[in-house]
Image (cartoon, rainbow, N blue to C red):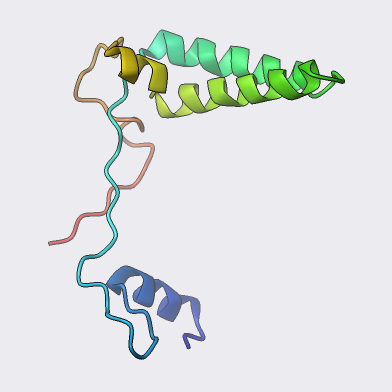
Length: 114
């Protein structure tokens, strides 16, 4: 069992399970970013409206106290990621920069294996 943070990270990156009888993961876990389909203006509006709905909903009781924070949280996720499931289902793309992904350049980390 790993005892240091470095050993835990090394096992996580290499996919080593450390359990006898289990096959080691030959393919490291990778994630691909979902292409952003929401434009910059919509993202900013989603963030502002989502924060307002979330904050206001947390002060309400009853059904509004449940629905408003959920909708506000969904708008916050839409604003942060730049991706909208409804837009994807309807094949709408308001992203002017078609090559842009969910996280703007310089604001995240990209890990590549050689």
